[in-house]
Length: 159
Image (cartoon, rainbow, N blue to C red; front, side):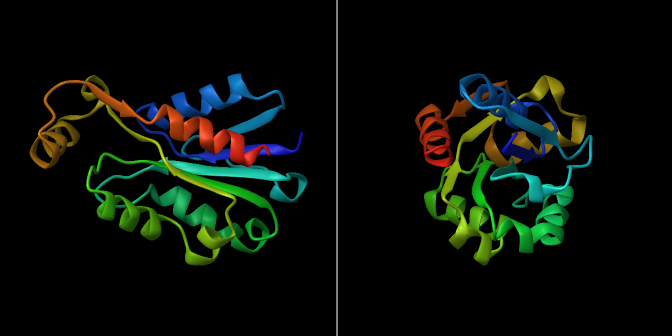
C-alpha cells in the first residue's frame, strides 16, 4: 500500500469526505483518524493526504502536532492538504489554510483544497451549538461541500 490519509474528524464531515475518497480510489488507501489512533511509520507511503476542520480559526491540535513531528518526512513525499472550513470570506479561508499548515509544506504539496463545510448541530455539544449560532448564524444542520474541489484534489494527488 502506497497511500495514506491522516485526518482529524470530530463530527464526521472530514471522515465522510475521506470515505468518499476511499470509495473512488482504484488504489488502496489507509485512513487514520488521528483523534482515535496513531499513524504508522510514514516512510512506507508514497502519497500522503492530510486534512482536518477549522475550529475557531485553527485545525485540531493532534493534527498540528502530527505535522510538526513528521514535517521532514512529509517534505520528501507526495502530499495533499485539505480542510473543511465554514468561513465564506475567501481571504479569511486562505488565511485559515495558511495558518493551518506550515509554509514549507504548503509550497511542497501537490494538491491543496478547502472542501467547504457541514454543520451537524445534532452531533455538537451545547457550547459548540452556541458558538456556531453566534458566529455563523446557523440554527439547523446545513452543508455546503465543494464536490468539484474534492474531485480535483483526488485527481491531482493520484495523477
